[in-house]
Length: 184
Image 1 (cartoon, rainbow, N blue to C red):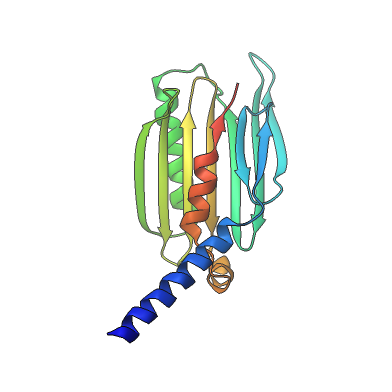
Image 2 (image 1 turned 135 degrees about the vertical axis):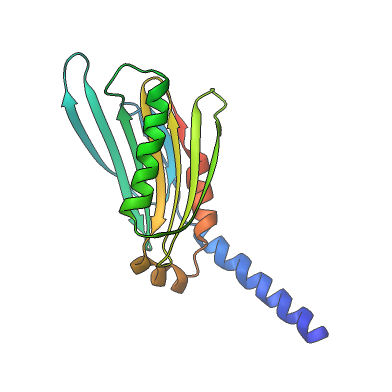
């Protein structure tokens, strides 16, 4: 009985140290006034901006991404192409779900949470497990100006690196996704 207690203490200490190692990364503030978004990230984001039209109003897609230790981070801000209406929100969520289910591979399990931000914008959060062992977590918010997406993920190829380094994917994803804020 005493040996079991000692093993449990050692195991829980190991788990706490492993999770702590991931959380102790050098997280930094990120802010883009042009994309109207801020977050904290553990790596330097690379920026891309694409413009699709100038009239009747300019449409831009802002992309930011980085990778550290086999885990990829992405922020995307897409201006709405059409006049905002109730279908804009539904279409944005459907497009995001299509991407999650078709780009990252075969989905084993997908969990969806839906709600409203403190500003009253609708959001969807996804927790996706892929059949090959990969993971994707995302947070998508739609307001009258744009669709804001934040993703964090690892593919099957990255799984070995993440496991080897004993990184807690969910703790990392939570810290990143909870930091996402829309700014004006």
